Length: 212
Image (cartoon, rainbow, N blue to C red; front, side, top):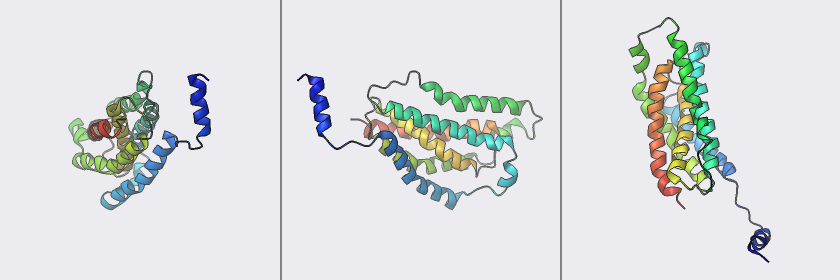
């Protein structure tokens, strides 16, 4: 019996099958989500004018941007959970929110400005944004790292950074329903800074907990 046949025989004799990384990641995020939602409901909540805000395309744009970050980040993180996987050929998925923001900023620039650019950039909630997104992302980050531990990423810091993008994207989706700053310039600045902070935390923690 050659080596390959021996491995297949041993695998066939072992009735235990490790759960798929995708299933564990999904379950871990579902377990962590109620804590993030509790933080959102306790300290933030949905904006009072949400019924009129949904008629504003820039309000809807915020959700398109945050979900276009979270969903591709999940896909890429699952790909990188395999030891032989490379980012090459997959990284372009993470540019989707950048493209959406560029289109939104260009669209806003062609409209008659409702307020000066500085006010649109700084907004009213920049400090809240920098606290809210990381706070809601941390439980999701813990869940994402737990899920990815069931894989075997060869670049744990990068996998941790992807976990940070996943959690920040999901947390930002929650925060978007609270934030009254709908300008794409605000989203491109403050949502990005908050996401970068969570991503850095994910990379730092992932470099330790995802190493095998």
